[in-house]
Length: 216
Image 1 (tube, helix red, strand yellow):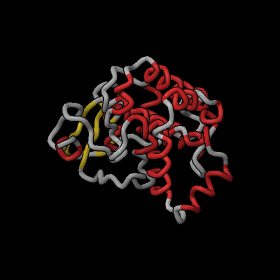
Image 2 (cartoon, one colour; image 1 turned 30 degrees about the vertical axis):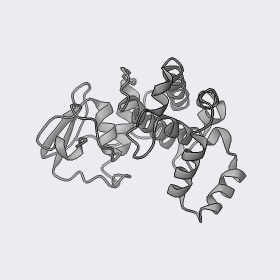
Image 3 (tube, helix red, strand yellow; image 1 turned 90 degrees about the horizontal axis):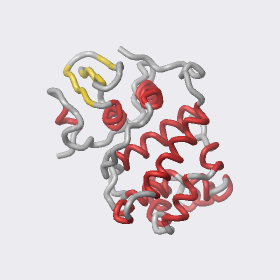
Image 4 (spheres, one colour; image 1 turned 60 degrees about the vertical axis):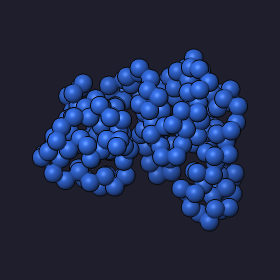
């Protein structure tokens, strides 16, 4: 059974990894046909463009602007995310690509979550796009493993409310597993999505409990 990797023991530079993932996504989308921007993502109700608009909010909104936007929706962060994604998703794709490459975005960290939270945010939303389109991209194993460890940490509840009791999750492309019980196996990327509360594309997960977490 895995446990969370201690901060500072990930074996790679977090700030460099975060920047690299944003830049990799920008390169991938920049070389893709325009239709990809309107393809559904794994983030419910959002296309690729809305996911990118959400990911890149820190590149466009400073602290004061963000708080003003939040106040306008009564402090409801989910409502804010939906409103900004819908509005900014209509920005030119060139602007969204520029924002993915922004050093401001690369340095941003979610309040109270630090660099680990920033990596988790980036990787989950990148996979919302990569696994949905789908793109033939395998994220670096060390980054996927770090996010799996953070989402599956035994000392705290799953942040997305995913019920994991009675399950054994096992990656089939790296040495990583979690829990005991009915087996669900698949690529590490697919398990990140499972732990993030997404409905994983059909065929990415296997095992008796896989249908619970797969798209219908």
